[in-house]
Image: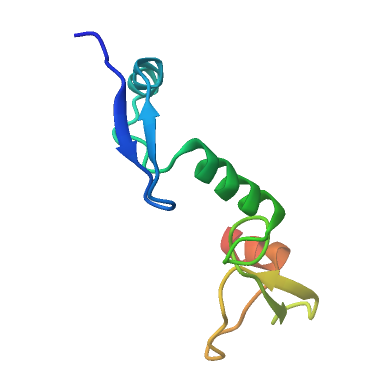
Length: 101
């Protein structure tokens, strides 16, 4: 069955956009299950925000980081979760070393 252009509504800006037959074919080839929910401009804007860290979540990885001192070696490091204080927090190297044990 050949694909036909579809008009969808962007979940961010509310504008209608066309999901072309070519895009639908590409989605099928890649095995994507869902149609796009954002227009091209909103997708590009979100991508830019993630890359530059200007989005709502902090750094360029799309996550907020928390500065901590490693419980093992005392090095200053950042972790992608807020420590609760009831458990030790380790730097990447110390965490990897403990995990290998």
